[in-house]
Structures are given as C-alpha cells and as structure tokens.
Image (cartoon, rainbow, N blue to C red):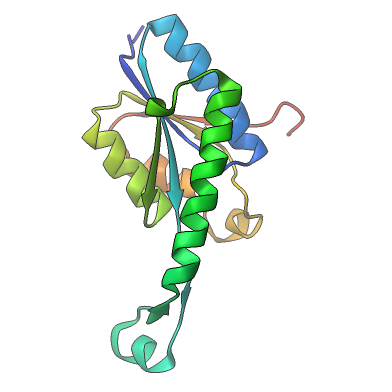
Amino acid sequence: MHNYQTILVATDFSAHSAEALARGLQLSQVYHAALHVLHVVEIPTYPVLEDIAVTGLPGIWDPELSVQITEESNKQLHRLLEQAGLSQKHGHILQGIASEEIVTYANHIHAELIVMGKYGVSGWKRLLGSTTDSVLHHADCDVLAIKLENEK
C-alpha cells in the first residue's frame, strides 16, 4: 500500500468538491500526510474576432471582474477551510486554466495524490470534457475522483 505524504484537494466549491475535501481530510489523517486545498480561479475572457482570427485565442478580459472573482473565491475558500477545521495555511488560490494549474501545483508540492470531484460546477463540462478528466490524463501522481453518494 502506498504511503501518501502530500495530498492535494482541488475544489471548485461544488458538492463534489465538498465530498473530495472530506475524503482528502480523511486520507491525510490516515496517512499523517500534509494536506493542501487548491482553488483555481478561471478568469472569463471575451473573444475579439480579430484576435481569434489571428491567434486562435481570446483577446480581452476584465481586470475588475478578475479582482472580484478572486476576492469572492478567497472568502469561499476561507469558509470551506474553517468548516473543515483546517487552518488558512492549507488553502491556496491560483489563477489560470484549472486542469493545468492543478497539475502544475501538484508537481510543485510533490503531491503523491490529487483528490477532486468527479464533476464540477459546470454541467456543460460533462459534454465538453471535464477538468477531472484532464487532470487524470496529465498528473504525475495518483488521482482520486470522488462521486456523490447518490450518483449512478
């Protein structure tokens, strides 16, 4: 049996993430492992036709919206950690593409296990490919995808 020393729980504040945090907390206690809780703020961008035509990438984003989303995410993470009985030092917020930031941060902290919800906030991601699927395919460590008890 593997002895996990560092566990990363990725949260998007969904019901699946709450289950993932509960499982990550449980596993960190069993293995006496360091626990990190990460939320990635994905800043919405608004495509500009010229930018898409030239680079294939969206062109503009709203810096005020970025600040608001990050501040709200900090509040939610603070509440989540408090409810779980964890100190704020366990929580981390990054900005970027969630799947990429989760994998990069897991590598940075040398995590042996990433725990995350099977599905996140967006129902569309079930159709388009989920963050969890991407992390499963790109992580250098074990990934545990948690589903809700009442899911089939």
